[in-house]
Image (cartoon, rainbow, N blue to C red):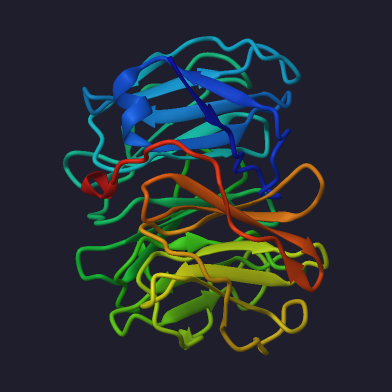
Length: 324
């Protein structure tokens, strides 16, 4: 039996507790590392993974403070991506995947913390993991790379609604999965990608809840992974990625919802994966990566101007790129 540390993907990108662990009893899910984590309406952690049968499996805490878990159960489906899960504004979880037909499929709780609807298609032809975030007015919006390598998106037409828009292109030429940032301090969604020139590019809503978006803008750099993004305590966005030297590099806004960004800065390390980033229970940012020894390593921000040394958390992580 293998225990894995949990990092939640709730709207604040905040861990519920450093001590939270899930017992991954399904060996295929444990080996794959293809898991997404979300918070339920009552504060429990829910984990979604892809099994050896290519179905989506779920496991959840029985109480929000407890160490007891429900055990793995199947939601079915035929999946070719990592699941993306998010909480609707009415408290129902919803999960999005790329199906074996390369369309976007979704499955949702019929009421908060209750049974599931079954899989339904939202169409499209996507070539990446989907990314989902919630608009300021409570509507979910999903982003994915299309067959033309552009960024495409689709959204609920009303909060927690079963009705969705058609697919719309935001252009660009992507070479990574899209990363939907937490909303900026003024409520606009912002998306970051690695483009074909291996630079970091971003695009953002021109106003909260808007279907109008900016033009694409480059933040430079030479990156070799999908980016990871989070907010500093003062609401400035910061983006992390592996660079051409296999070190971890980051870039950040100089001011909240500003068009002005810092230069790229290195945090060192020897990465063999893209980064994952969370805010821990103490309010500090932590970045997790796979290093050259295939172990899990992390580095954390210890003050507004300093970072810890790299520390190994052990383990042997496999490459999950085959499902991306």
